Image (cartoon, rainbow over all chains, first blue to last red; front, side, top):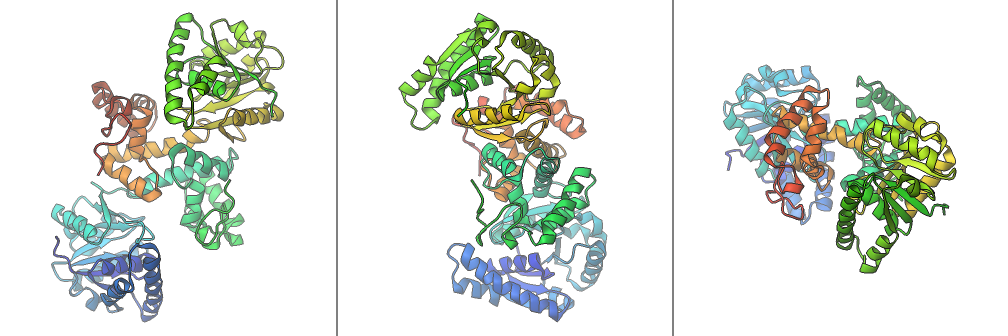
Length: 294
Length: 294
């Protein structure tokens, strides 16, 4: 058992609210902080939708369970108040280095000595802004995947100056939060999951954009060969094609870049963004089942 | 329905015998050719093991079914005899360009005009040796994956001079052979399957050899993230670590090369080659179930 009781989740966007809800659902006292009251109004709507998602997707969840989670959740836009009793802070503020540095600079002064600092950054590394925390030895990454209530992986990634005991505590805390944590021994851009997934997706993007094979055949091949429930093109529809194409356009590989541009112009800009719009590379019903599968 | 009735499979190694057996099992008259009587003796043992594999793994297979397959199979080391009535030749001779060229040069003269030529090459492209066939327009790749009786993918890959009607016929034939064929629109090294799989495996190799995470965590992450039954390290144990490490050592990426060398010295040379030896990255029982999984 760790000593962690009070958890502050900074940033109440899509992932921040999911992380906060899951921590509250697991029994922690959770403070959800965001920068303005408007942002908190949006957060409330997200928490309402999470009540429904847990009742729908997490087996055995009762009204009492979701009510309990909501009772343990406090919303505030006052940063000092948000961090004053925190045993652990999970930062999920926008993915820009200056915003992160500014946030941690303020928290460094306001948080008590005991507080462990973690970041949910996806594209940056803890070492990119550890100095701003004022306590790099108590700082590391605790990374969640979208749809926290069903994808229970938490990647625990220290930088080379993180105290080993702190890393262990965060690992144990992730279990207490009902996640299935995975330890990275050192910093790695993309953690484990994206380090594996991105090369697979890019390989599929290149096969299609260079006219070797069609998405349906590529997905069928992958599913037959590996037994996986989804092929790479359906996985991209699930992730969302706006995200997928935006990222692809930033890559060096000419074919990946070309793929990104093509998808943006021919699918995203025509409203075909994947599961969310019931159409992307494939067509889906509202439950995400493919309608055009053989 | 195609007009194909007589199929000659050239090369009676691991994959050649599997292809020949599957074609015979599906009702074709099959000639299995290899270069010497010694090779054919080995082939007979392989066919005996395939009788057992089909009865074990292919649901509903009776003694009559496997006997029927064997009755339709003829073995010969006489190449002229092997190809004289062939509607289709599937070449699975050793993966060396000179051996392939020499083989096709002989067959070009001996086979009747009607015969369609296909190659099961994995690492070469049809265009690398199409000229040796003397009939490039009737020549393309028909590629099978190991364990043909359970992995029913056949990748149909024409070169840019293959007659479209011939490609369609081979595609239909693959279905008649009870495969689930996949069409590639143009030549691609690694076809679809390996074009996707290799980048995933190399990404996992790099995460481990650069000390980011352990095989068990990497596999667990991949399985949780994608719902796939196997992670990349277990997949490598299944493929066989001798093959995996030998290929990795030929790559340009320094970390992939280092992975290959490490695995060769620390696993393969100690007899830990994967499923086949019940131990590789993980330990297995005789049915390939992991013994050390959480």
